[in-house]
Image (cartoon, rainbow, N blue to C red; front, side):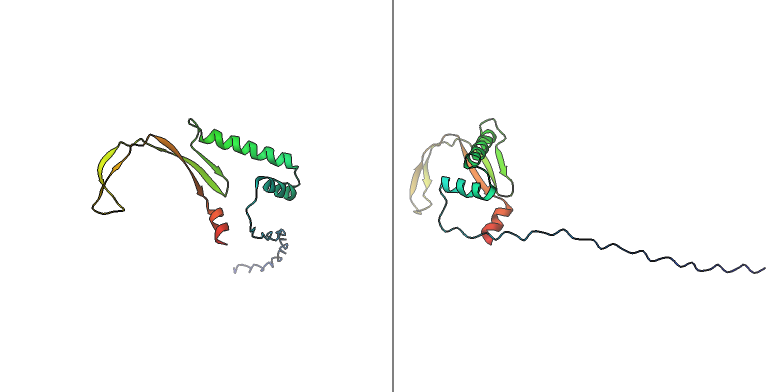
Length: 137
């Protein structure tokens, strides 16, 4: 006996739904500011931009100031990041001893004395990638 041939079954074409992409708001064009803002001008600009009261903007800056202080204090974390903008870091430099008869780097052949320096903490502000990109554009 010859086996019966199977019928080819046609599969229905599946209709794909068109995926709607979310409308992305166009990037806000930022103008270059010729003169540096004063503290009150900065608060006024931010309050106008966000719709917050000027006093609320001042409170936000005061709170940010306290948070940064807590991070960089003597027993704090030692660093604080403002997301996307900068990293504030504390470097602890050890004390150095006084040295006599050190070659002067600015006048070859001359010797100089270097004074002792106490141990100190140096605050560094390092830019993050987004801030570097802002400056580049």
